[in-house]
Amino acid sequence: MGLNGRDEHHSPSSAKSPRGGGGGEHNSPPISCPRGGAVSSFLLAAALLTFSLSIGITATLAVTFSTSLSLCPMQALFFPATSARFVQPESDVRPPGADVPRLAYLISGSRGDLDRLWRVLHALYHPRNLYVVHLDLKSPVEDRLELATRVGNNTVFQRIGNVEVIRRANMVTYRGPTMVAHTLHACAVLLRRSRDWDWFINLSASDYPLMTQDDILHVFSTLPRNVSFMEHTSNLGQKAEGRAKPLIVDPGLYMSAKKEVFNVWPARQLPTAFKLYTGSAWVVLSRDFVEYVVWGWDNLPRTLLMYYANFVSSPEGYFQTVLCNAPSFVRTVANHDLHHIQWDVPARQHPRALGLPDRDGMVGSGTPFARKFERDDPVLDVIDADLLLGRGRNGTAAGMFVPGGWCGQHRDCGAARANVDDWVLSPGPGAERLRRLMDRIVRSQAFDGSQCK
Ligand SMILES: *[C@@H]1O[C@H](CO)[C@@H](O)[C@H](O)[C@H]1NC(C)=O
Ligand SMILES: *[C@@H]1O[C@H](CO)[C@@H](O)[C@H](O)[C@H]1NC(C)=O
Ligand SMILES: *[C@@H]1O[C@H](CO)[C@@H](O)[C@H](O)[C@H]1NC(C)=O
Ligand SMILES: *[C@@H]1O[C@H](CO)[C@@H](O)[C@H](O)[C@H]1NC(C)=O
Image (cartoon, rainbow, N blue to C red; front, side, top):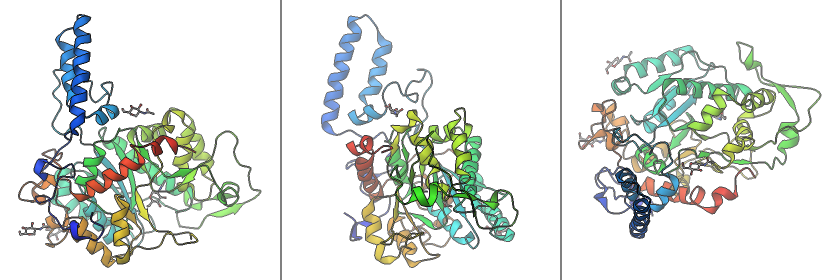
């Protein structure tokens, strides 16, 4: 469905629920179960109840069971009763929507990116999430001030208070360690800012979403919170010679004007204390893993950060190598970067810019994000119109947001208030595409079979 674009025109009120039933109105997870599931969990509960009676334990356990009754077998697999989120004191009433996760986005740009960063921020905006936006030191100071002013002057951003501008801009060299340092900086800002987000997502001003935040939040609410998405392999191929052995120095670490990285000699050997991995620089990291990397109670993330200081294109290896050398995280990684990216054949340094002819490919990929796009490419208007519910159609500030459950029945996104109904989701066809992708990469044999190989 949707490949030819015919099914893509819809509004939240007419959108069919991806799970069928429910009429499509403001669904919020947990979602109803497939029919077989209710029966088997009933039998399970009955068996457990008998067991508990036989060993003389009373009402308390029965209460626990009634919670597990409402879970689908699959969800029960992902959220076992031992999950911290489900073991709550009985008096503690869980707020509505507690199962809906929060995403923490970093959106980075450079010189000339002010307007497209602003556009991406609106295309991604949802009051439940957190956003850190950054224009690097290469961008004019006026642009950085303008970004801060726009955020400060936006009534919704101010009322909800979930958009943060990094004011002291970082020097960022794309192939150098300053990029990794910048990403870690944003992670640290987000950890300090809130104890309450679930995934960190790294994007740039030349990325764009292919579905609504309601779609993404809806599907992510069905995932175990410990899953990270990171394309990776230990098969370095050419990169062993071209990247792992050469030593570079990034002047961005210590000069106030931008210079390119330079090589120093002699080259080094491949490491033996840990195994190198490489992959995509676009990552979606679980909060657990971000804490592990940023807080550094284990020395591995710190050691590797220092090792990667002299590594060519460290953003395509740092997180992969940390995760795959940390045994407690290996089983949590899905080998995918959740982006639709088109590489030329043979691959060049940068991916091909996406345009109108790529529309079907983008929709068919089921990924939540794509890159990269030229500034104001017409395909972005098509994405706004077809995949993002007509975002920007009315030209008003409120119309710039992608309408979602949070905008209420009257679709008045401008009236949103902090912590009010931000968990009410209105997923559309994008959620169905993403669910199918997750079935392939997380809820399948491929998940265990492709980790850190
Ligand atoms: C990830 O979380 C799920 C659900 O909480 C749990 O069953 C699984 O064991 C966890 N995996 C790892 C490697 O910790
Ligand atoms: C702030 O917004 C108001 C109206 O929303 C506008 O008139 C004003 O020019 C804006 N100020 C700046 C500095 O952008
Ligand atoms: C994060 O996003 C930027 C885009 O600004 C990208 O270039 C960078 O390599 C990404 N990844 C990491 C690991 O920093
Ligand atoms: C545009 O405005 C009309 C009329 O006020 C409204 O019905 C419609 O939902 C708005 N569209 C968007 C995308 O905000």
